[in-house]
Length: 308
Image (cartoon, rainbow, N blue to C red; front, side, top):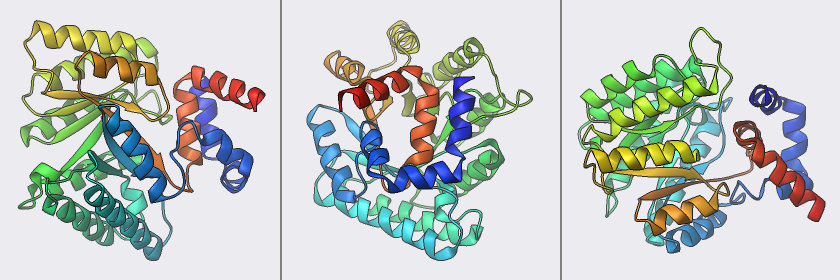
């Protein structure tokens, strides 16, 4: 119920304009968004790296409306890759295909993302581009896109994607991705989807996540388990120990500003951990979905505002 409410708010254009243009909105979002500029993302990444964790940097945005916006989005990512190399950051990048113009011109989007993967592959050490998953209308298009990129000579080690455990199709999608040794970030899912294609009950989503997580951990391919759920994390740790899965064979992934205590605990215990750091002016939809995913985030923001 709460998640659906915040997903609905994330799609409200009037609220988005107010939030993204107001100082109050930006102040509220600071917990979960590193800032609006590449320099902000670099500083946040340096702090996280010093704490022993790697990073995935995301320039927030989706559903551009013209080719120039798509090219501008891609250019920002080229600058991020330059900043990663110049500052010797332990980081990769995450992007959405609709931010690269998928709905405007699919050929253009393919060229823009292909250029970013090529640049990432050319870095020393080689970089990595995570193609994020969006709502279900984009699931198959995203997977087709990633399979095609991964088959391009020289790209295989520098591109991967995301699978959402709440979708009923995800086990089949994982089988196809693993057959080509494509790296996966497994998350629960943050969009509102119909019951015909998605599990709705938390216990069903959790059970499917754990099932898929175990498949990935035994695959011999390096994947990311994106969750803040301590029960799921303990299940992963116990499974790794039981099945002799090396701690270097996968990583936990968590969001910037959420459960920093848990992030630090994982690092102290020797588990690889990556923090997803978003930045940019188009932060409102992302922010609303984060509030819907975890009610504690709403309470945190309320306390923060009362203290301000």
